[in-house]
Every structure is written in C-alpha cells, then in structure tokens.
Image 1 (cartoon, one colour):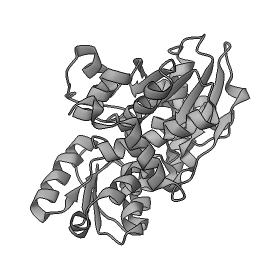
Image 2 (cartoon, rainbow, N blue to C red):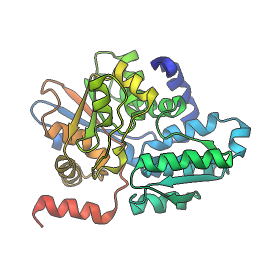
Image 3 (cartoon, rainbow, N blue to C red):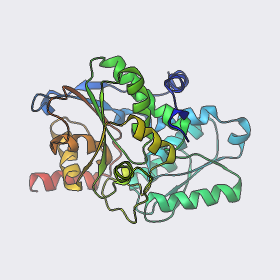
Image 4 (cartoon, rainbow, N blue to C red):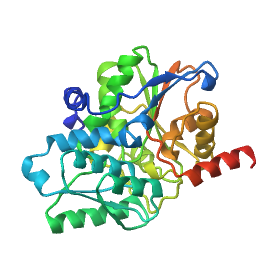
Length: 324
C-alpha cells in the first residue's frame, strides 16, 4: 500500500464521524516536567473512553463497515487497548466481537474487554502469535477481521489526535508518541506534515521491541525473532506494511528507550504530573529523560496513549523508583 492511502481529508472525515462520540481529551501544560528549556505538554488519551486512544480508530472503522461486514461479526488480535476499543465500538452497534489476546496480557485489559461484551480468547506469548490465530479464526468463521493498526480507517481515526493538538496548541514545535505497529504515529504524521510540516515528529519504541526502528534503519519491513519488554502496548514483532510506508514518509526520527527508563517514566508521570500512564504511554517522557529529544525543540507534546496498567505493576514501579 502506498503512503497516500491515508490523507488529511480522510482524517477530517474521521473527525466528523467521531465528534460527540469520543472524549475530546485535554492537552495540558505540565510545568513540573519542564526541563532544559523544553515546555512539556501532555495529550491525555488515558482519559479517552476505554482508557486509551485506540477507541478512536475502532469507532471510525466500525462506522465505515458495510452492513454485511457487521453482520458477520468482528474478530481482532490485541494486547489490550485495541481489544477494549473494538469491544466498545462493537457493543454500541450490537455486534458480536471476538478478541484474541496474548496469554500474558494485563488482567485489567482482559477484564475490560470482557466487560464491554466481547469474547476473549487467550493465545500465544505475544501480539504476533495472537494475530496469526485471529486471522485463522476470521477465515474459518467468515467474521470480519479488524486490524489493530495496519488499516486506513484505523489510522485516520488515530490521526484525529493530531487535529486536536493543532487546535489546542497551534504553536506546537514537536510531538512525541509511542510506536507499536505504527497506527498512531502514521495518523499523526498525515495530519502534522500536511498542515505544519515544520513540527518535529518523534516516535518511541522499547529497546526490547524495536521493530519499526529496525525497519526504518534497513529500509524494509523487519520481523524481529523475539521481543522482550514490559511495555505490552508497543510489543510488536513486525510493523504494518501501510504504517511502515507512512512512517518512512512522515516520521522525522524514531528512537528506542530501555525498559528501565520506561519504568522510571511511569513513576515520574504518577508522582510529579499526577497522571497514571501505562508503560507504552510513558515511552515519550522516557525519551525526553534519556536526552533523545533536541534541547531546542521548544513546545513538546507527549501523547499519553493510555492508562490501562494493572495496580500491582504500578505499585512495583513506584516502589522500585523510591527504593521501597
């Protein structure tokens, strides 16, 4: 797929679909995080319905499905946030939704997905294992498969975050966001680079799962042999074909951050900014703490993509960082 499969117009159309149905999440200035001349702003998608940004893309996708595709039911693979987003989007249309999740998925995400009415099947160690099982399930049952990131309608829905950032902070200088499969960073790229091409767009991956970083470095899609990261929301062995092309075209830089920095960032966001962020969502702040963002970047927006973290894991991060 070419990078022009998603356009600014398609994101604007998604915004029209989503208006009044999603939370228009706040963008706040966080003075307590300012450092080295950087002004830090947080786009709080942890306040979105289902606790994560994924609901945007899911709702846009479901709205654009044909009646026949809806009747067949929906199937997806997800480590948790796409699962909850699609479960709720399906529930709003009274659709049957089945989600395949990795066996080690966060308990809160599994429970949340079931609470929205979806059937949950636990399969495999990581997202990519669940993905293959979900594809087979869709083929065997005739259900409609809804990809968690490599889909134009999903990407357009995520891109509405970029529209809101520009509306709330027209003078933004840089946007930093996590990368898993690449749906969010692709949507942001479409909006920012077609509206304010001077805005620096930075994507962050865990050092233990740098599939997009490696793909961009080599110039071709890479599938990692294995991944190992506490940031389950961005633990993807292989990015999407479309998201890879979009990232190649729009992304200014992609950086990797170690899990220790992500854990510390979860703590910092909780204790200094009073924001609960899951590990994947804390990656942008981890990148800043690791010195991976230019010190002259000016007004920097960190997209806090979700807050769905199990309480024991959050407690562990807080205890470890405080010496408890």
